[in-house]
Amino acid sequence: MKKIMIMHPCIVTWHGLYQLFRRRLPEAEIVPAHAIYDVVFNDDLSDIDLIVSELYGLNENITMGAKLLSFVQSIRQEKPLLIMTDVPGNQVMDCLGYLPGASYIALSEDIRQLINQVDRVLAGNVVISPSLRSEREISVFNADTRPFSRSEIKVYSLLQEGFSITQIAKKISRSVKTVSAHKRNMMGKLGIDSEVELYACFNQ
Image (tube, rainbow, N blue to C red; front, top):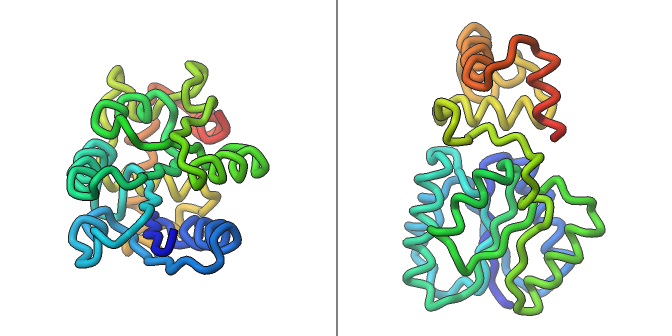
């Protein structure tokens, strides 16, 4: 593969994915993206051999992201798409209908398993992480709960990565009060009463 596009809204995760693919394919050109719209409107889309993407971007929720990636795949003549995601398994499985030929790897996989699964994708296989199929996963975006807003998804993702409320407020250019309100709203939608339960969700 000569050209890879990596899309992830979190710059830290993006750099981790960049290092992973730089080691696996040292000769490949790696194109950055932080929103799925960046993928859709890339002028060289047909020349990209592999797209590695999260299911959501800076400006897209999961459902919109899956639909946009489905459109991208429709014009790429069946070139591989690898979803590397921190989205809970139940919601990932809901995206299979939009992206049936894609590979799905959980970013929470043990690093050796993750690398093994990436290598299988690079060898031409379609891979789905076993952990994504697990019913024990807590789905933040489950149909039984009220859906998270895009802002809540962003806050949830940053909380999961270990950022504090103050750090998140600076990163997304919102007030601490607004970020705290997003956190309270998420807890209400999840039906949980304490921060301990919220942080427990991150480790499922």
